[in-house]
Image (cartoon, rainbow, N blue to C red):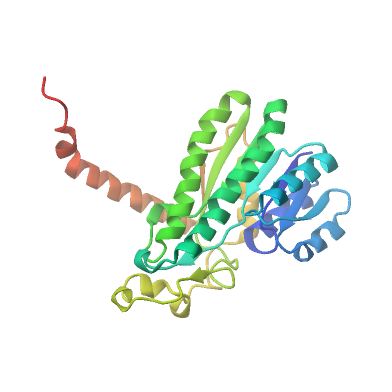
Length: 276
C-alpha cells in the first residue's frame, strides 16, 4: 500500500486521481485551499484518506501538510504536484503581480513540496514525484506565454531532479496533459485585466470571453488518473508522460518543426567554432 500526497484535489485531474488512488485501496492525502471541498473524499474513505488545507504558496502550510501526512501514514511515497491554474495574456499585457502569483503557485509551490518530501524519500531510498505540466509548455500558444513559461520551468527543473534522484531510488516525472474536461478553462482560468487591441488576432483570441473549448475537451480525467498510476508503478517510469491524443499529435508536430528548423540552420550554428 502506497501513500499519495496530491495537491489541488477539489476538482478536475487532482480529484480524479485522488478518487482512483482511494478506490484501489492506497492511502491518499487529499489537499485543497478550501478543505471542505475534499472532505467528502475523507468521509467516504475514513481509513485511508486524510483531508488537509493546503495553499501551496504558503510555506508553513506546505511543511505542516507533509508533517501531518508522515505522522498519519508513516511516509509519503508519491507526491503529485497538481495544484495550479492558467493565465492568459499577451506578454506585453501581463501584470507583474499576476505573473509572480502564477509562478508562486505553478512552480515555486511545487518546489517547496518537493523539498519537504525528499528527506523522507531519501531516507527510505524510494519514492516518486509527479509534476503536472501542460502541452502548453511544448506548443507555447500566443496568449499563454507566462503559463507556458511557468510549466516549462517546472519541466526543466524536473528533468534535472530526475537525474539527481535516480541513484537514490527515487523517480521524477513530468506529465503533459492536452485538453481534459476539467475546470481549467472555466472558473480556474485568469487573464490580464486590460487587453491591447493590437493583439486581438493572436493573444486576444484565447481570452475567456472568446473561448469555446470549455466543456468540450476530448480528455477524460478518470482515464488520465489511471494512466498516471500505471506510469508511476511501472518498472521504469517515463521522464515525460503525454496524456491525450491531442497532446501526442501536437507534441509530434513540434518535434517535426524543430527538426526541420535544426536542419535548416545547423550549418550556420556549427560554423561558430574557434579557428585553429
